[in-house]
View (cartoon, rainbow, N blue to C red):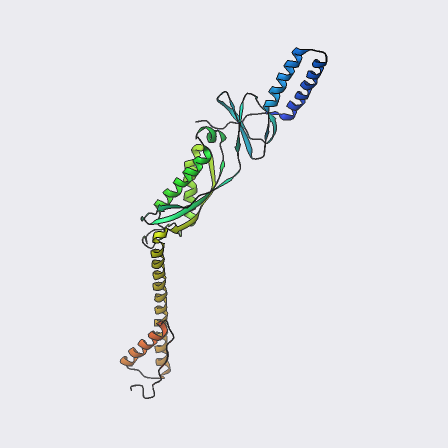
Length: 284
């Protein structure tokens, strides 16, 4: 497999000065009617012109001479290279790949929608051009494959898999790190370095989203009820203890049970309770 190697290039300004000298020579030979020098000067001028190239910042030129990889010029500026070499431009800038939403199955088989964004750049220009057919398309395909594979490894949440330590919903940082690592392994062949990879969209598929929402709502209601009951029991216990300490009223077990029942109804009820005033005695 070809690996990148640096190559030197002559200054384009020196080549331009030589080109000007040749142009003066051509003019002088034309004045003194010397066709041989004129033809030679024109040929040399064309050769020098074809070798001139400009490399912008964060760009590189890969040189290929008669099917053989010569090297890569990474330094930006104005240069002159072998005029017979093919110059292929490769951008070294960081790029974003905003993946589209994909419908996949998580570890438990639930259909989900997932999408990820990948920040990548070319690290090895030789591998990018010669190891794969189209390195941009290669990044897109491998990124999609990596996201699909990652979604199959973890459950969406831990409702059905309570023993799961990492889920797609709650383990965003760990999942992103694993995605970045897998992408670097997949794209190393093409000389691509992944700077960052993160999940940007995660949701249940539309066909099960409603059922999953109801399940989440039911879980939230149960958790809220549990907390309400725990608080109500504590308040009833405190009320009975304070009444006993202050000796405000003496209650037998039956009246205590009735009082506890009434307090729990008041404290745990969803709606406000209308009090009933007993005009008789406590036992009537």
